[in-house]
Image 1 (cartoon, rainbow, N blue to C red):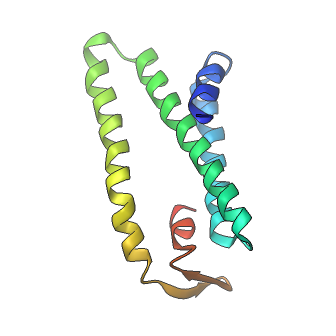
Image 2 (image 1 turned 135 degrees about the vertical axis):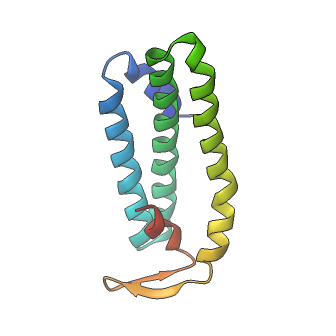
Image 3 (image 1 turned 135 degrees about the horizontal axis):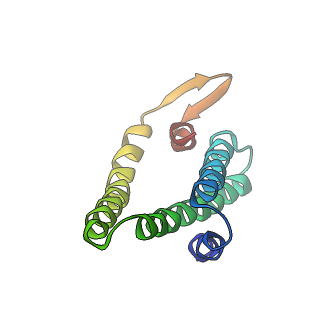
Length: 122
């Protein structure tokens, strides 16, 4: 709702590479926040920022492909990027199930079923 329209507006105003760098950095920071969130509010904030980042990245990738491919190549590349995105939706719950088994420490932080996905993504 937020990331894709924002990325669409920004793609006309800045290079795709710069926009992808911004959205990837936002995703990294939001995953790190999720991993070390001291309170529930920060978990919610990190997930909001992750969603914005993901929306920005996907919209920017599709725009980049549309601008930089021939009409003959476009369908193949768009289908591949979309398939990888859908694969992530399929693999997410499977990885979440595996992360539910975690209970260890990394750099003094507890890594368990609640913050394991943040550590994996960061």
